[in-house]
Image 1 (tube, rainbow, N blue to C red):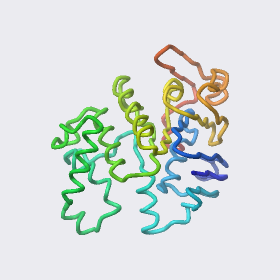
Image 2 (cartoon, rainbow, N blue to C red):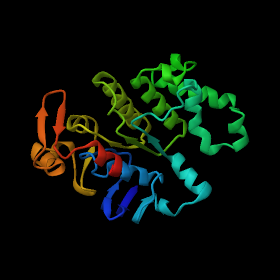
Image 3 (spheres, rainbow, N blue to C red):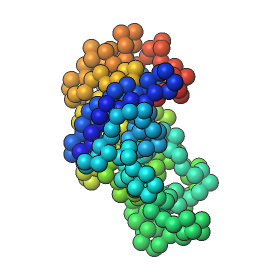
Length: 270
């Protein structure tokens, strides 16, 4: 079980995350939604220990992960894998090596510097790539792949860690609709087949409704909704995104616009 208890993160006198609390039991697929600057990315980064909290606790399987230091902190970051919007691959490195880098926290500095990998690790990396349908890309440079393929490589790198929790920070925000569907289908299949907890920051309502077992809505750093996709009505969405947000819903997409939704707020607070 993952328990977020009264977690707050301050930047100056502004709360990026403001007293957030919720629990996730079992291997749920949870979506976190909200406008730019709502605190979604900061929350995920605190879970993974990439960003410190100002106050509160993050407890996983009875242990407050915020107290972990050194090797124990790195071990937690291996158990709680992070997938980023911009992939965070090494562009000039081949795909297989990028996947193998999921093991860096488990290796010695010397082995990493010499780029030494066991046959078992290489075989496992190739098996994961095959599972995600991109085994043929293994010898290519990461920069030669499409955005959707690069994101699947990033997912493969996360799986190489054999994590208990996968955090996906806007994993499809920079992808076209077809590749976005492939990536979300991949994450959902990993959840269903492996029983891994997946927590994803998402930017469209239809994606949250289609893929998630549970949806958490954030506004101004606070949790303002926590329920099922069926409960995520347009009225509820307006409470999350603000009364001035407009919704253009169809069978395939939901777009959200707001005059206060700007890139600066995202870069400073999300």
